[in-house]
Image (cartoon, rainbow, N blue to C red):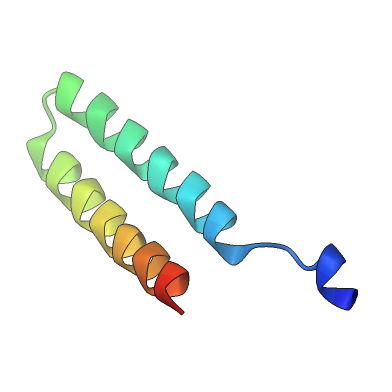
Length: 56
């Protein structure tokens, strides 16, 4: 019953993941490939965290 009001942490991480991918796409469009690579790497780390939470 008390789990009803508990928030799902994977939803928050998924929003952050999508935000990082959007920022990476915008950096790529602006020609900043280093920022694109850095943001994509951060997004992949978030994706791995999401997968780890979903497996547990």
